[in-house]
Image (cartoon, rainbow, N blue to C red; front, side, top):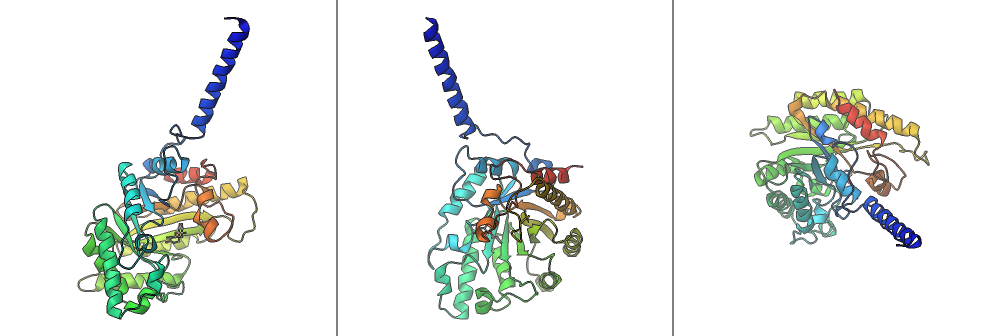
Length: 358
Ligand code: XIL
């Protein structure tokens, strides 16, 4: 081969190699997260809440990180009533089924979220015109059918989500207004009947922020536990939509001690640390990143103070900052999660890891 030909062949070969490397980096099946799996470092479950639609295809960083770093998956929307009930007489489990089957193939237990909530209800429900008994049948059927359908495949259910106002009053949701206050207890009973092996949780936000809300939740639990027979409840999910300063670790500790005294499991559900609540920051800075890292460390540490048999786990609410619900729900720039927009681990991730260390 003449020199000119050799040079052409070598250049072509080099270009081909570059193209292959680029394709690999772009992410198809070769993407490998750089850090060791986060969940394997913890003595309690570490999970993530994710939307089931899209981005789980082979090689997506989102999907790869979800299954690499987290030991348990909460479908962020797929099990809510609006997702499952397109019409009054139709249950559509297809999307939830597909997603849960994927989690099963990945060997990840699934946390069910949520059976009874005042939001993300289907529109037909708002126009549902029935007697109190019709409403009762509707809710009991929803719980029996949903928890029954996934019996043995969903390890725990957030049976009721956000039933209390911050001032401790029972929220005037459509469930309460049609079924009366005892819909709460009924929901837990129906869930136990539908899936006797699933752990049953009450899930709410702001509990460590609002003493009156904490008192209301504790009174509900005391009531459940002292009835004859007791109303089944296994734990409380504290939605950790928090900032780097609020609530204080002391306030969280107080909630943990009240719940442990009642022998309830505690789930730090929906953890994200907002760093831009007032929208004052236009850019992400190393200083904010460090403060957030410290906050994740402190949250993991205070969680570890719980007796281990009451540790239901910590669930982070999303993977990369770019997908956080805070951005689209509140229409606010924020950086609340463990990974940045490019799915690179942040100081938040390393703070979490350090929090798990001895
Ligand atoms: C959020 C989801 O993450 C979003 O995708 C959806 O648009 C709105 O709901 N409390 C809850 C969660 O219990 O179900 C909410 O999840 C966040 C607040």
